[in-house]
Length: 97
Image 1 (cartoon, rainbow, N blue to C red):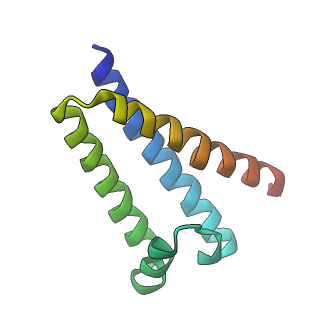
Image 2: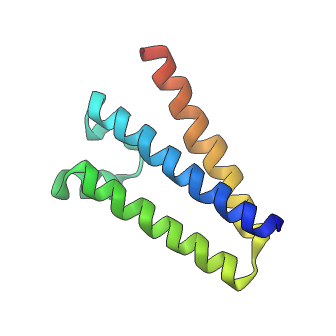
């Protein structure tokens, strides 16, 4: 049961990061994105398409980790996304609003 919940948590964190990044890039432009590869794709394809592609790929990779049974890696990535992406975006956007 907990591995499935871990996968759901990972997907929810990906969605949250995507929505928060979408909001930040909409306000500040692609300069708000810290990943230079993703920022370049945003400039080339538009930030909606780039974020949708990146988050879809991340969720698929999370699914592969789940199927492969490497739950500790999935858990580690979830913690990383929570504290390195979601929480910082929430803090930045809460100060700006």
